[in-house]
Image (cartoon, rainbow, N blue to C red; front, side, top):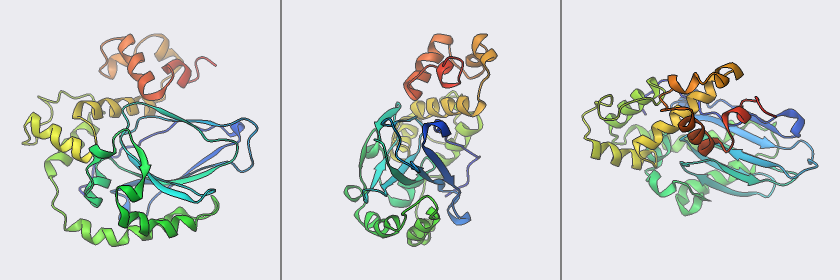
Amino acid sequence: MKSVPPYTPRQPTVTRDSGVRYLEVAPPAELADDIYCFWHLYTPQPVSDSFQYRIVADGCIDLIYDSLQHEGPFIMGFHHRYTQYDLGHRFHYCGVRFFPGAFPLCMQVNAESLADQFQELVAVHPDLAHQLKTPFEEIDSPDDDLRVVANAFSDWLEVRQKLSKDHRFFDALNMIYNQAGVVNLLEDIRTGLSPRQLRRVFHYYVGASPKAFCQVVRFQSILAAKPSSNSLRNNRLFYGEGYYDQAHFIKEFKRFYGVSPGVAFGRHK
């Protein structure tokens, strides 16, 4: 896949006092253009209160495996809003987070069919599900290196090099990343694709329209900025990120995150 500028899809911080741990592991170099990270979400000990985990919109596709119940792998596609799950008192999930566009390219799967879905991988890609089952089953604890799962992707690497891909889409992706999602789709995205063609390739590779993807990248740039209480109080942040006004900023942020910016960034407890 064509390299793109660094994109760092972020999820909410899991505080240590919650009793839950979250760990990200960098992929091997040969997979770094396609995979953002391997990850663990787990409880070292059972927690007293059933844990509510919020997943925010990040534009990525994740493969997820339940290491305690030995269930999965599952696949989670592009989401247009946050989702929340009750994980119970004891759990260990591990997974693979693909950069936007990577999974559909490598696996020849239409991302639009995965959008806003959480389903078993076997229903989407039976061969890959079979290949991943054993490596995932070998992950018993967070001390196990999740990169062992990367070996299951080795057969796809050579195939990927031969795939026909639309470089115009990845050029558009570059432009959106470079502008942190704040782009005029008609004026700023000039890759030789018509607006209709651009929508078509984004629905295939990402699972959403270019506009929806830009909104997520813009939202993620806010998370990366870690705005201060002062910038939130003085309404400065949303102007620089291309929002119409504060109300627009808050409404979109809550759709992607589930709470207001003030709550998310710790201004209100």
